Length: 124
Image 1: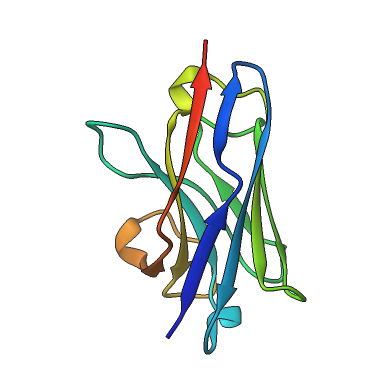
Image 2: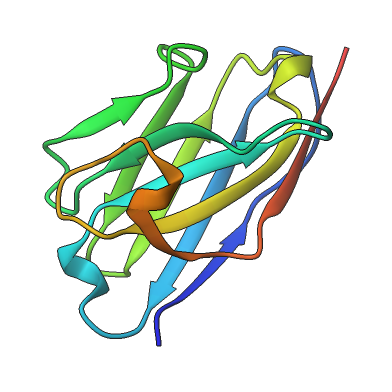
């Protein structure tokens, strides 16, 4: 059974930074892409970023491109999301997910295992 555990969320002022971590464990997870999604109150879950484990393929939502950086450490089976220049509209629960495929994808239906989520709150 694949398990994903997120950490690193919290409260930060606008313009600040946070680094989210996602520790992955379980069988064959290292073959599949990993992604970050977020869900704000009253809104649908949306794609944030994704990466393959070799690190040579990444994808970002337009709203975070240039501010967020995704990375992975295959030695520790951990995926990171470095979030800089945070804005109040980045406030959401952030979820880590394992993809069904090797290459990064944007659709939530293309991910089969999900973490419990970590809250990120950006104050103005």
